[in-house]
Amino acid sequence: MSTPPGPVALLRRLVDADPGRPRITVYDDTDSPTRGERVELSARVLANWVAKAANLLQDELDAGRGTVVRLDLPPHWRTLYWALAAWSVGACVEVPAARGSGTDPEDAGTPADVVVTDDPAAAEAAEEGVLVTLAALARSAPGPVPHGVIDEAKEVATHGDVFTAWEEPEDDDPALRADGSTTSTTDLVPAAEPGRVHTATTDTAAFLRTALAAWAADGSVVLTRGEPDAEVLARRLASEGVTREA
Image (cartoon, rainbow, N blue to C red; front, side, top):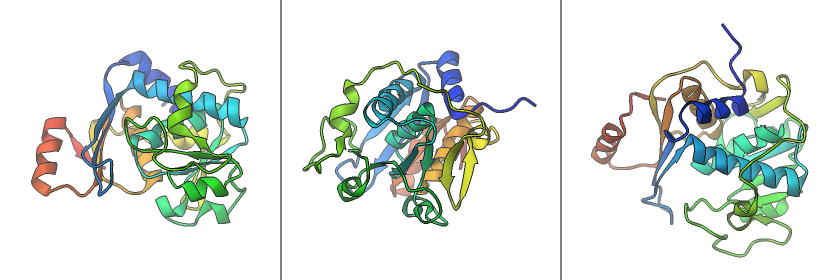
């Protein structure tokens, strides 16, 4: 068997194969201002977001190989493009235990150079902070942005739709720190698991792995955030053509 592609090569393969096909669909049933949102991204649109976020990381924060990007976000479509953006510049994504499981990597390795978060306090405390607003149509953060913190909703759209890394990531570069362990770029994409996959996980690292495994098999992901009524969920999954649960 051939070696599975890293996440950057995998995204390129999805764009080349079928740029308009939905790859991530998110339903928001959380008790929050984003409740009721349904957002669907094709490979092309996802790649566009990835390029913009990668350009922000590289041009404004000098992120590249050796950089640790702490991804303090819940499972979400924005989480996917920030993870892929970090991998595009060659950085290692770190998922804290509060959004995953196991040992908090902040206590088990090099501190993060960049923190991408929806928590203003966490962004302010970081060496380099990026404040993410989860709402789909947000054009700026809904509240005050701490001094020195990048307002993602306002800034990411100003960056280019095409990204070229200063230095391409290597196969043995650390790519994901979660659950008390580190995974390299070449080992990051799990075994392919085909189908239209549904997940309601609150574990960000597990969500990233589920998406990569589905995409490796040319599949797609439906994410439920929150706890919808059981009948509503059943109708939704049927209408989305979900073939299995993750």
